[in-house]
Amino acid sequence: MRKSISATTHLTITLVWILVALYLIFYYAPQEATMGEVQRIFYAHVPSAWTAFLAYFMVFLGSIAYLWKRTRIADDLAYSSAEVGFIFCTCVLVTGPLWAKPAWGIWWTWDARLTSTFVLWLLFISYLMLRSYVLNPGRAAVLGAVVGILGFVDVPIVYMSIRWWRTQHPQPVIAGGEGSGLDPKMWITLLVSWGACLCLFAYLVRQRLWLAEARRELTLMRRELSARTESSA
Image: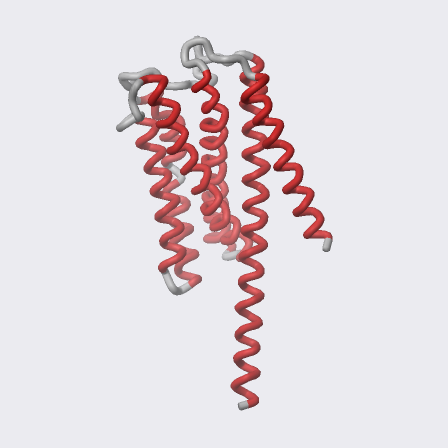
């Protein structure tokens, strides 16, 4: 009962936080001088990207912990973070081109950051497909952990891509030096939006962990029922 109430409270906080973030995005944050209203996609795009990075970092940590200790919770955390992180990474790939098209007249095709983010998205898919199609659960967990650890190298590449590879069109850089700052109201809106994403990420991971435990309990009950049926036959 306590878990149900706590989860409900978590969900309520998440929804309220999202509503506050939406208010700040559309009514509080000032309009950007050069890009206009389309710049407001920034407040969904950047927090989604940061949350996707965090998700893969959780996959990375969970994978290391699983290979070291072989603990079930570490594997569950990595698996759950990968599933939820995939959603946020997909949001990045959707909002990025939507933002770039009216701002720069292109869909960000073959841009260094988009391409490296697409690679990260493929890594999420590879991890999830491996976990789904390898029938042996233990082997799937080990192979998934290896992919989760090796694939994390793409996260700093995504972040540094526009600093390492200069592209034809200007790219958004935050805290990247002179000329990259934000208006204080924009910073507040960005951080509140990221907080909403983090709260949603935590809630979804929590529910996914609960689902993994429920599946294990259901599988155990089925095995016990099958054993009882066979013994009584």
